[in-house]
Image 1 (tube, one colour):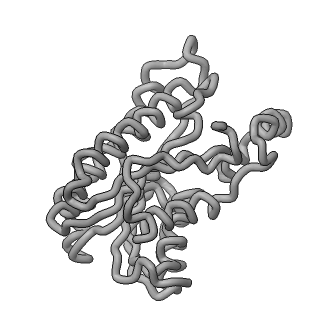
Image 2: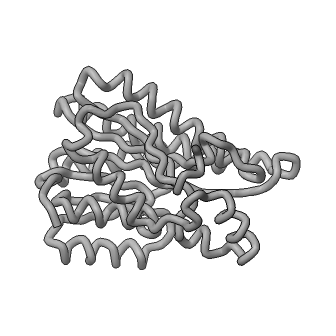
Length: 249
């Protein structure tokens, strides 16, 4: 455990499981106190609070739908009241509703754009005024390698994650003068609940696309987020770091 993020306050959206959970733990290992949101997994969220507190960190969680603008504003205000500031925002919340475009319902399109792209707008807007008044902050958006290379059967997800990259670059340009860095991480395939549902044939097809011939561990995504959240990345903004085993090459 280090102290590169000592006395920093981090907000991680969608952190009860998978990549988000690993990110919360990685930031806590560097000394940050953690606020996080989750949508449905109350038991997992409460377990994560206890795990973070066992590391000697302050930790609070909020049940919320990241696509709900009003909830995002309220949660940010509550965190500022509770902790006094927000130094790091990790926009990690996301959903999938996969299907070929020809068969995709309007509801599945709208849900994914709201859950994956509007959510980044919601929380970034909710924290940026506070970060501007602090004259420092880090916003890290979790995109996806498919937002760069595309993927059949995921038009909605790919559009949302490509949108996150564009939003990241615009925010980086708008906020740079206030010493706020905005970067994106684009994971490839990661061993999480989402990929556990794939059958062996699907997994083999995916591995054939990855030069490193394996999926990532959630911790391998979290370590890159931890780097971007620290002063080690103080001169980086508007960047998209692919953590994808070589898929985007």
